[in-house]
Image (cartoon, rainbow over all chains, first blue to last red; front, side, top):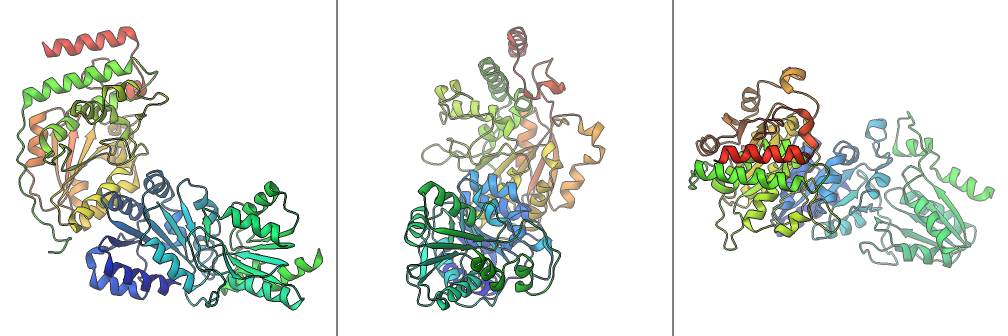
Length: 306
Length: 284
């Protein structure tokens, strides 16, 4: 994802002189290094200083540029939170802040590097748009949208590196603000976003193995949420399952439950998320997800139990 | 030329007029006092301490050579709570209307106690302290990238230099050698609660701090039009400039000067009349 973002940004930056990237002491992956070499003035490293990273982006946007802020997700959003809120969102400036390692991707670095509440926090701010692509292909499409958008601030939540492509042959094209079906069925709908989509796809396969007709959908734009499409999914399936790498409150699961209540949905609804806990666990990404109960086995056990 | 090379800025061509500035500043204070009688509270002393600074920028330093009469340079009021003086100057320029000011802090009006982006003449939303210099750094850098000759002038409170974010901006402006950036610190020595020189002794010295961050730094009497003009125009111009403006909080009204309660308060009728008398005496 990181490299796909970098490649896409580099290509767009060659075409549009307004694009600039402001990083806070993070080693520029792949093509960002190429961008830095070819356009040194449009690459700014503020060092270990995230408030000025966001403040500079706001000032650059106020003078007509299209800056991107880029660092590890926690440092993109949490450290400079009030700058994101006041400078970017209150003024509704077209600045994209890219958070690398959303969720618990940085699985060996501990809780200081886990952005496990980021989506809830970003979605809570008026004017903020929140996009979390599920694979490198969606990362390319989301980045292509971000480099041309005039809508306002965007939190682009990415994973790290090495995510598999999950959207080849997707039923729907990618469009900002639209729920995207990767496959369509009639019994069960599995909704997810971000790299944990890989786990969602495994759960979808499990349902298929039990003879179910299954939809798998990428809810890549979490804000604004495609509420109409979510309601249609609730009404047209017997069972809806939400899987997200985020705390249980303020994310997709709680939004879908609220929409289900408002729409009087009759389907069964299960939501799986990170726990409302800091787990002092190290290992692979899957090990930290497992500590939060996000494994195929744990999810299937709960789905079978009811 | 690389945007980072500190390009020497040409000397400013505008000329100061100290007598005219004195008259204007008395009128601005009087206008703010009048508006104070329409609201229960406003940041009157923080506005009075920077009247001459903001006046010097708008009326002598910054260029207004755009065809529509708008500013060529950029002004950012980082100490957003001092914005009354900016509002009355924008009113005088015709950017804001008397009707806009009559609706100050009222339902249906567009002007609040802090400047909002989108209001005519307001470059950025401020109010939360420690944001303005960072945005100014971004704006100055953007103008460098565009190879324009636009300068960015940022007025900050001294209290804002207690915010870590201001020092991140100071360091970055120095790193980037933003010669098109001028910061003016309204050094009235008062934060909301107490005097810096009493409660926060490590706040001083200021010039040495700024210089060690790669800035040119000078001190000036913040109520002296000519001194402010000279401080800005006499710069070397190869790096960002900090002008530490020595000011009096509540300047111009005897009972407000150096008295913390006037940070956010409206004079009552008697206090208002006394203030008006004092301004008239100075004018005569």
